[in-house]
Image (cartoon, rainbow, N blue to C red; front, side, top):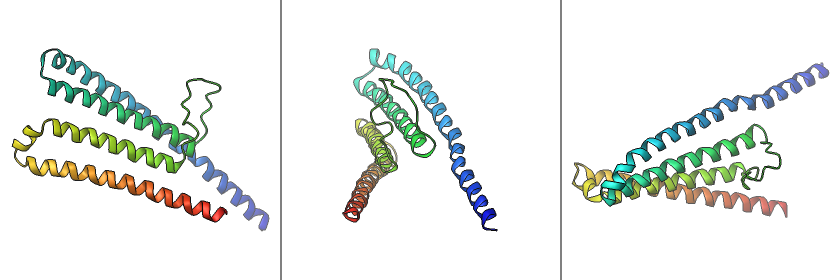
Length: 181
């Protein structure tokens, strides 16, 4: 009876461990998302060309900020893909490739959370900057004050959340250090 239970336990453990491969389609979907962002980036870039060469500086700056915004989201997806795959599925074997980013293989779940919130705050900051560049138009629109207040409030909430994540992580790391001594 004990032998059968041990075999059942071993089977369940191997089954659960193997289930991590169910995450792979999610990461492939995120790679497809980067491809879609590339298309969005190219469309925004092409639309920006006549603005840069014939439009006003504010519109050109908004267009460039849009390109930066799209790029940050693509970078964020790449971090999630690499770190998530390596943390939850399998190590990525790049051999001795000199182009392997130094952070690959060193970003733990805690680091991933901080990178994620940091990227989200940066993206939110760019969106806020877009509103500030067009502040006259935003404030002259119906409910423009409310819209701007919501954008600032959301950004501040994200900044506060990022600081709290970092603080909680530091506290947790400090607790582990104390326990080890």
